Structure formats: structure tokens, C-alpha cells
Length: 198
Image (cartoon, rainbow, N blue to C red; front, side):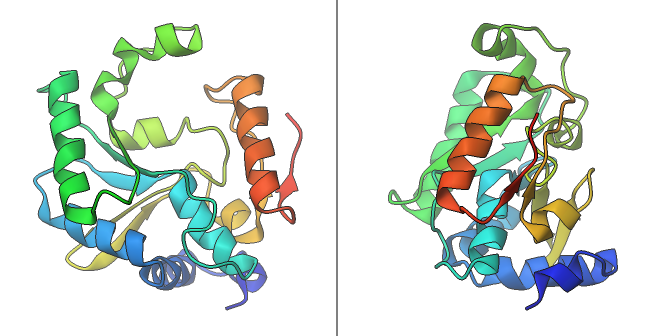
């Protein structure tokens, strides 16, 4: 599959190609199927695991290469407890197995801990999509989910950078230090990525 050519293709063709890539990754394929059956509001799988699947395909590496964990986000302002978030994580973990690292986040509660972790307060996100739009790079600001077996993609900065293997800062929220640390880690895993300086 020619990802360079797909970078200029229609959104429909890009999503179809990404769907094919994700289905070839056994963990992501299972995770997307499992999450579709759970009563999670406004959920997505996103960030590094989705980018890793595309970049592993692009650079001829096996599925799962350099994936530290699989990020699952959802949005539930009705229950902002850490206990509920943990219960969701355990439910997902039980289905995909203990050998798969899962990181589940209720984006409705991120504002409660963001300031302590990153040194600046943020208002409550309005949705999972609002959160995805702030993730560290344009290529990883991508969320995917299945609905009725069909892949839905939310990519506020488009899919071009992801498909071309370009790491570009998304300065909406993250700091230079966070971006550069992630870009360095990704470049170490996929040396042929093009990393745009901060």
C-alpha cells in the first residue's frame, strides 16, 4: 500500500487504508471490536498506538513494534471518579488480556489532574474530540473507533502527516519539552520519520 500516494487521496480512501492497517494489527483489531460492545460514551482508541500501526506498516515492521500501551479515551462527565476510570480499564484489560498494556482515560476528568502533572491548569474538555485535538503532534492527534463494524476516524489536523511519517508539533496545549521527548522516542523507534522541530 502506497502511503505517500494516500496522503493526497480523498478522506474516504485514507480511512479505508487505515482501517486495513488496523485490521492487520491483532491487538488493535481486537481492541476496536471489544470497545464497540462496551457501553462507553464518546470513546476512541488513539495517539501512539494508532500512529505506531501506520508507521510500522510504512516502514515494514511487524504490528505492535514500539507500542508502549494502547490509549483508550472516553468522555463521561457524569462520573469523574478515578475509581470508575479504573473499572473501565480493568474491564477492557480483562478482554484483551494481561499481556497488552492499556491506558484508559476519561477525558472529562483530565482537568482535575493536568495542572499537578504538567504545571498548568486547563478547563474541562467538552468531549473526547476536544481532547484529541490537543495531543502532542499532528500525526498522533488521531482517534479511531468502530461503529457497526465501520471505522470512524477523528483527525482534526488531517491524516497527511500520519501517512507520510511526519512528526509535527501541535502547540495547542503541550509544552516543547513534552513534544521533544515524544518526538525523540518515536524517532528512535522509527528512524526514517521526519521530525519537525518545535
